Image (cartoon, rainbow, N blue to C red; front, side):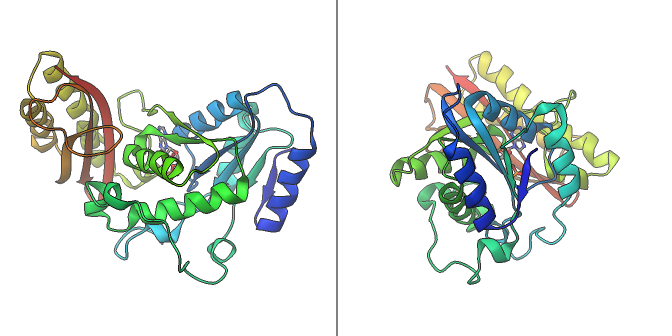
Length: 294
Ligand code: AMP
């Protein structure tokens, strides 16, 4: 039976039990997958990969107030713990000895908002950081806390949130956090829409128009394959996003270095990441894709 624990003492006891077992046949004793719940197939891909890498899997479910801005959707963010547990116990995904840690904010922040926090530095100021000031600091602060609480050998993050993944990798390197970070490819619906808990907000018309994000990535990739310069590639992406059947407002479309998130210089060659953020109706969506600049 998967154990559901809601406080840090119960978590420590469950992990202690794992630690006492003989080492199993995997690369790591324990993997952690951190989520905000409202789970979908994208999250489950992380859990499946975690299962392959470790004897035991810990899934955390916590809607972290620190990473929401004052005007953002903290209160209406979808929450469905029962549905999440059903998904996690389906398909033999989680089993005996695995743990779901679903704390309340009072458990995570017993003395109120933490006084000392992690800062993402420059990577937290550009692009997502520009539109969501403090967001990545809030993410890194809870990620580091959850890393300490769950003591994993490996932590898995989705490439869907590419800037978050880059910031986590950087934190682990800069602060010598003793674990391995593994990125997992974006899971999409059959029509190309990247899965996201926030897709639940979309009306039928908005969902149709949201497809322009993945279409925009495809247009950019074609332009790159044809040898287009970075400004031509971006123009191809923006044309799709802002055309008929496009988004309601575009926050950014940028070609960046995949690890630093600095925008690539004109004339640069090699691997780059096209990152997009846009609003469709009231919903803010992000997407990204790798391409090669020639
Ligand atoms: P969230 O619950 O949105 O905070 O996401 C938890 C983890 O799942 C993060 O590492 C996300 O990047 C990852 N994730 C969310 N959606 C997807 C997706 N469509 N494909 C791959 N990973 C995802």
